Length: 259
Length: 299
Ligand SMILES: Cc1cc2nc3c(=O)[nH]c(=O)nc-3n(C[C@H](O)[C@H](O)[C@H](O)COP(=O)(O)OP(=O)(O)OC[C@H]3O[C@@H](n4cnc5c(N)ncnc54)[C@H](O)[C@@H]3O)c2cc1C
Ligand SMILES: Cc1cc2nc3c(=O)[nH]c(=O)nc-3n(C[C@H](O)[C@H](O)[C@H](O)COP(=O)(O)O)c2cc1C
Ligand code: FES
Image (cartoon, each protein chain N blue to C red):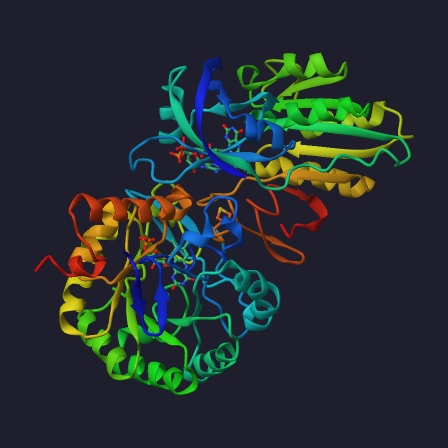
C-alpha cells in the first residue's frame, strides 16, 4: 500500500456518464489483485473533503479505473486532463479469491450490475489466465448502462446481457438471467459466483447461490473515510461481528454476512 | 530543536497522531515513518469489547466530517495481547487512550496499563460524544476531577485528559483536570453535530448525531486552546482540523505545547511527517532556536 502522486495518462468518456481513467502508478499495478481498490483525492482543496474509493478496473503497467459521474468528486475527476496529477492510495482491501485449481473442475460465473462491472474485468482476466471456465452476465437498468461488454467478450466467449427495461439483451433482472443460465448449462462443475452491483441485486444472487450451495463472493460498497482500516467507519455486520469493508472487504463471502 | 516534555514523556518533536484516526499504528506502517512521530495515541479502548454504533457511521460535511463510530474496540485484554507487542517495538512514546462507563472502569484500565513498561502515558477520553451515557464526564467539572483523581492514584504514567468542546466553559474543566493531577490536557475532541438527507428525511448517521472534525472546527478549537493555555499551568496539546504545518503552528502560537493530527490522516496518510518537516522549516526561516520560544506567542 502506497500513497502515490499519479499522472493521469488518459481520461475518456466511454458511455453516458462513464469515464475510464488510466493512472501512472506502477507500484499499485504490480501489487494489485482483482477486487482491490484505490482511494483517490479528487481535488487539491477541501471540497470534497474525503477521498473517493474506486475499484481497480484493469492493470497493465499502469492502472485503470472505470467510474460513473454521480456527484462532486466524480465530476471533478471527469474534468481532469491527461498530464494532470492526482493522489492515489492503494492497493487497498481484500479482493476476490480465485478458485483453487485443485478443486474438481471449477467454473466461475461473474455477475456485473451497472457500474459493478468495474472490478470484474480484471477478475475475468485473472480467471481465464488460470484456465478457469468463466461465464459473464452483465445487467443494467437500460442499454446505455451496460458496461464492458466488449472487454469481457475479448476474455471469454460466454457473455450474456440483460436489461431491466429490455432495451438490450434479455428483458428483466440479471438474477433472472442467472436462473436461466443455470438451467441451461451443465452442472458437473464446481461453481463459484462473483458479483458486484447494487445491494438488492447482491442479495438476490446470494440467495440463489445459497439454494444451490454455490460459493458466492460479493463486493460491497460502504461510505469510507480512511480506506485503510483506521477510522472504523465502514463496518459491515457479519456473523462473526463487525468487519471492515475497506480492509476485510470489499469482497466478502455472502454466507458470512448478516444482512 | 523541537524536543519537548509532557509530564514524564520526552518527545523528539511536538507532533502526535490523534486517537481514533490512526488505528493502532500498524495500519499506517507502510504510509508513515512511525519512528519520526513525536508520539502515537491509539484508538480509545474500553474494559469490555464494544460493537460500536450502527451504520452509517461517517458522513462528509463542508470542510470536515461527522463520525459516530461509538468506540468500537475489542476491549483491553485483546488490546494487550494483540496490539501491544507491535506498538512496543515502534520506538516512539505510546500513549493509550482509555474510556470507561464509570470511575471504576477508568481506574481498572489505568491500573492494568500501569504495569506495561512500553506504555508512556494514558489519555483519558472523557469526551467521546458517541456513547450513550448520562452526559460526558468532560461536561462536568466535578466528575472530571473525580475520574482524573482516581486514575492519578493508580498510575505513575503520564496522564493526559482529553477535553470536550461541547461545554459552556472549557477552562473550568481544564482546571478541574489540573487540580486532580493531570499532567496535561488535550483539546479538542469532536463537536456534536448532525446532517440530514432531505430526500428521506433521515439523519445521515445511524446514531442520529455524531462528532464533527476537520478544518471546519479549527477556528473554534484554536480559540479554546488559546483560552485554556492562558489559564492553567500544565501543557496543552492542541488539535482540531490540523491539515498542514501552518495549521499546527497556529495552535502552537495560540499556546499549545504539542499538537495532534486527526482527520487529516485519512485524507493524506503521510501528513504527520510533512507537518514535522514544515515546523522545522518554519523555525529555521524565522531563526527561532528553541521550539519553546513560540509557544503561546500570540497574545
Ligand atoms: C470499494 C468501493 C469501490 C468502488 N468502486 C467504484 C468504481 O469502480 N466505479 C465507480 O463509479 N464507483 C465506485 N464506487 C463508488 C464511488 O466511490 C462513489 O460513487 C463516489 O464516492 C461518489 O463520489 P462523488 O463525490 O462523485 O459523489 P457524492 O457527491 O459523494 O455522492 C453522490 C451520490 O452518490 C452516492 N455515493 C457516494 N459515495 C458512495 C459510495 N461509496 N457507495 C455508494 N454510493 C455512494 C451518494 O449517496 C449520493 O447519492 C466504489 C465504492 C467503494 C466503497
Ligand atoms: C473517525 C474518528 C474517530 C475518532 N475516535 C476517537 C477515539 O476513539 N478517541 C478519542 O479520544 N478521539 C477520537 N476522535 C477524535 C479525534 O481524536 C480528534 O479529537 C478530533 O477529530 C479533532 O481533531 P481533527 O479535526 O484533527 O480530526 C475520532 C475522530 C474521528 C474523525
Ligand atoms: S474506511 Fe476507515 S476503516 Fe474502513
